[in-house]
Image 1 (cartoon, rainbow, N blue to C red):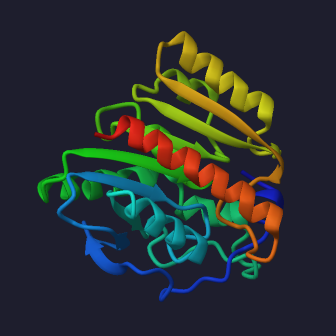
Image 2: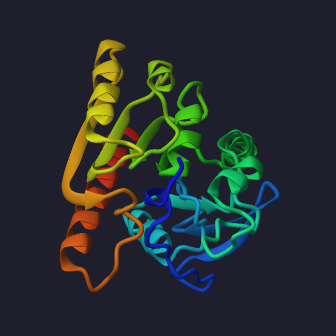
Length: 238
C-alpha cells in the first residue's frame, strides 16, 4: 500500500461524531454503537485514518440499527496516518502501525466481547483494515467477513480464509484492482468458502468511507456498498 492513491481524500476527524460512545476495550479506545446486550457483534476495522472518521462512525450507527453491537477499535493507538506529517510518509508510518500488530490487538478485543456474552462476531475491514480482517478469518476468531477496497492482502492470504467472505472493490483502484478481486473470488470458490465479489463502477479506492457528502454519486455508491455489507452480515451472523 504505497503511493498517493491509498491516502487520497483524508477525512476530517472528529471524536464527537456519531450517536454511540467511546469506551475502553481490552486496553484500546473503541467507538461502540448499539445495544451491548446483543449476542451479535460487528467489528469495523478502519483504514489508515483511524476510528475517528465521521463516515465510519456513521456507518457503525447504521449497522447497529440492524440489531448488532458495533465496535470500532482504535488500532492506531491515537496516531492515525497524517498526510501532512512529512516525517512519517506512509511507508514509515506502516513500520509502527502494521497490520500484524492490528491483528494481535484485535484478538483480545474479540475475547473481551465474548466474555461479555457476545456469541457471534463478524468483521469488516477497510483498506488497511481488510488485511487485519483476513488474518482473523484464518481461524475461529470471527464467523463472517467483508473486505472493502482491501490493501496488502495477497492471493495466498485468501487461500487460508475459513469463513464466509464478501469482497467489495472499486473499478479504479491500483491497490486492489478489479482483476485481483475476481481472483480472490475464484480462490474462495475453489476452496468452497461462501463468497460474494462485487466491483463498483466509477469509484476509486477508499470510496466507502472517504466520500464527500456533497458528491451525490459517491454517496449513492458508498450506501450501496454499506447495504451489501450489512446484508452479508444479516445472512451469516446469527
